[in-house]
Image 1 (cartoon, rainbow, N blue to C red):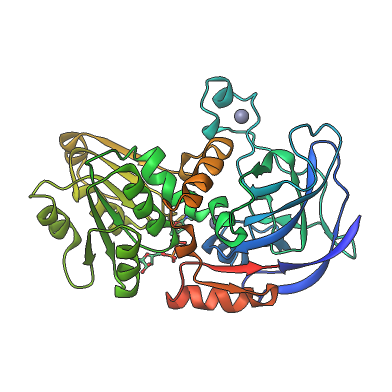
Image 2 (tube, rainbow, N blue to C red; image 1 turned 120 degrees about the vertical axis):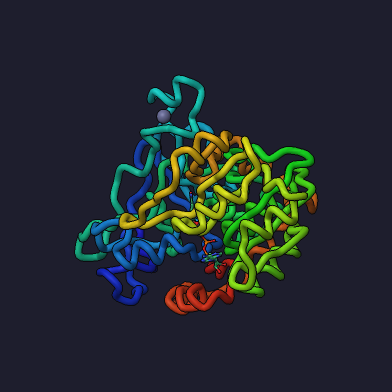
Length: 360
Ligand SMILES: NC(=O)c1ccc[n+]([C@@H]2O[C@H](COP(=O)([O-])OP(=O)(O)OC[C@H]3O[C@@H](n4cnc5c(N)ncnc54)[C@H](O)[C@@H]3O)[C@@H](O)[C@H]2O)c1
Ligand SMILES: [Zn+2]
Ligand SMILES: [Zn+2]
């Protein structure tokens, strides 16, 4: 066991605290990872605000890269010194989804079995089964994905959640292909990554939609060919105009509200694809003519973690990054210290950042 500093949310809405955490030595199938960088994601704020559950105290942080410090028994493909990106999809290999060859839908993903605790023994709930605003964290070995150590940790770690969700919404769920037209509604970290993913896939028209011109300017840097400020113009009409009157082949809703989902639905060409990657809240309802759902054909999908398979996607995306084909550095707006998480939440609200990243 060792004692390190970590950032917890002790109760609903209370400011986060930097406290001492007891980290057990790794047991069977587990690893301890020295964190080098961890992005601040909207989901951390959801945890703090009680939007995900009531299992306080939460150990926050989950978009992280680091170096494996030690591994427990029965860990064969990971060793101290390995550079890894942490993931929240350590697939089991045995559930129905895994056995059918669709491990990205795994129903029984692995987390560490032992608990990290406060010094008084209170067990912590790690965010998304990771908990990485901490010097060292305990995870299941399968949550560690080895990637090329030449990558900058602050950029690589972002693949661990939001950036992967956006890239995968375009590449995996939306199956964007060469010559497709794509519209992305909401250009925060996730939507911007969907834009970068659409460019990587060879889309030739990429329309960024947001309410905030700062986000639209950034979207252009990442590959948007056109931008629409939906405060100023109707996004459905604008998307249609920019696609010769048809609508886009793939529309990605990276906001997750009934009105943005409807914009995606009607901004899409006949037989096109809608991808919902933004996360709605429990009270949100959707109403629309069922005949439109039938008549317009195509597919309506949602995307959890970009339907990624970390072992397949992380090393490949890091290689593309190192070759200069995926601008992961552009998502790192600022590097902050471990005491800067609360301020980073404020900046998130202000719309000033794609990602603040805690570096250790
Ligand atoms: N599906 C997944 O696996 C997954 C993973 C991570 C995050 N998410 C979710 O993705 C969503 C986006 O996350 P983020 O980190 O990019 O958040 P963010 O706050 O950085 O970005 C949201 C963007 O949407 C814009 N926006 C808000 N309302 C809008 C509207 N009505 N029309 C157009 N644009 C609008 C904002 O201006 C902002 O640029 C969140 O709901 C988050 O929880 C999903
Ligand atoms: Zn499984
Ligand atoms: Zn996240």
